[in-house]
Image (cartoon, rainbow, N blue to C red):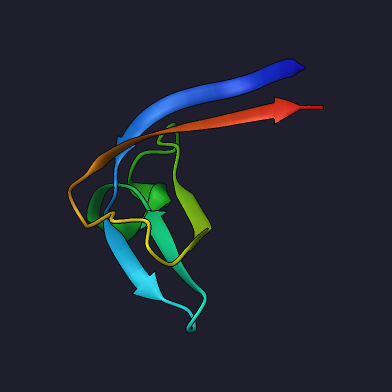
Length: 65
């Protein structure tokens, strides 16, 4: 596997998508990646039962397989 990037970040918001999944998000300072062009943000669907909440720190990894 080729590692593209891995970074740690705080979850800004958890949104309910449907009865099967939620979405964890971080959209940068003030909710806008435009405030800091180097800020990495994420918007990832996760299965229900994850136990995550706003303020939790997570590690995001992207690998090419």
